[in-house]
Length: 134
Image (cartoon, rainbow, N blue to C red; front, side, top):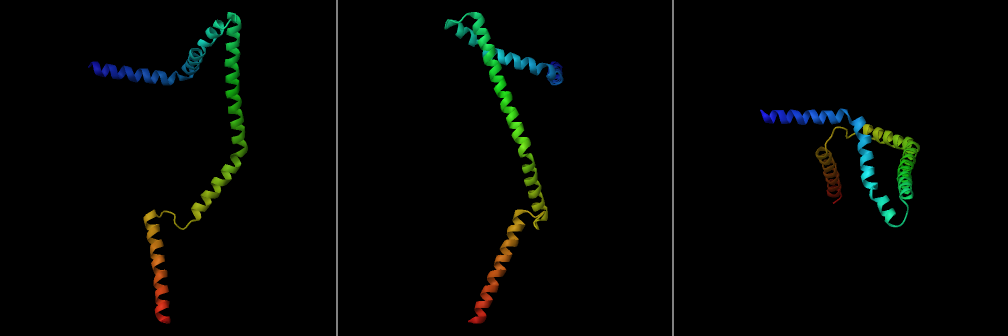
């Protein structure tokens, strides 16, 4: 009985986390950034900067890094939007080529068997021609 209650509790927690992700994700991201950045003002204070200046410097560093991440994402999305017609055209061309192929639905073993049969037929024709000449 206790195991069923524990399993039910786990499911309730998991579903609660899933449905509260819209609220929890920004909070957890802020917590991670805070934990990562927390040692920077202390190290700047030990180097002789006043407390307010080390805090402002840390905030500027975090803002700069987040701005660079956003800039990289924007440049990547812009490049994707620019190159997407090329990718779509290439994909459409490959799809058309694969649908016009005569090997649709054939597995590799039957394809290799067909190739082997045509090779052996060609070699038989060559040997018959040589026999007729000789």
